[in-house]
Figure 1 (cartoon, rainbow, N blue to C red):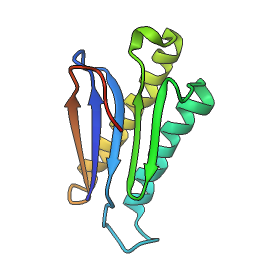
Figure 2 (figure 1 turned 120 degrees about the vertical axis):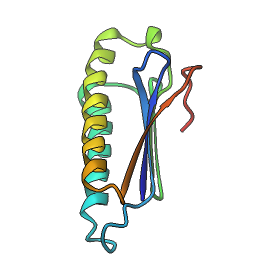
Figure 3 (figure 1 turned 90 degrees about the vertical axis):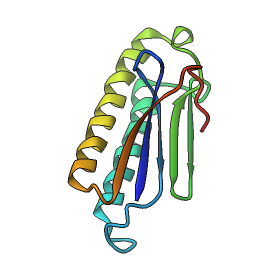
Figure 4 (figure 1 turned 60 degrees about the horizontal axis):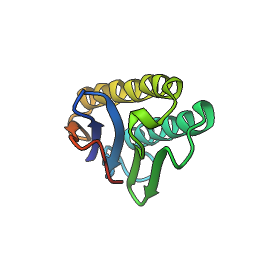
Length: 123
C-alpha cells in the first residue's frame, strides 16, 4: 500500500508531502495506481521548482527507493508570498487527486493529514 502524508502547519496549510511504498495494485511495471501516484508526485516537484521557481534552499526534495518527500525548508514569512500562493494551488490539487485515488483504490492508497505544530517537517 502507498501511504501519503499531507503535512500541514497549525493553520491547516499544506507545507509538504511524503509518499511511501508501492500500491501493489498489479505486478511491477503494470501498476497503474503506483504510476499515477508517481506522476502526480513528480508533477508537483516540477511545478514547484521549474514553473514557480523555488530553490532547493526554499523547498526540500528527496527521492529514494519507494519514497518521495517534498517540504518547505523555510517558514512562510521567509518565502516570497507570490510563490507561496502559487504553491498552495499545486499542493491542494495534489492532495485532492490523492484523496480521490484513495476513494477509488482504498486497498492500495492511504492518505493522512498530519499537523506539524513546529512547522518543521523532516524529509
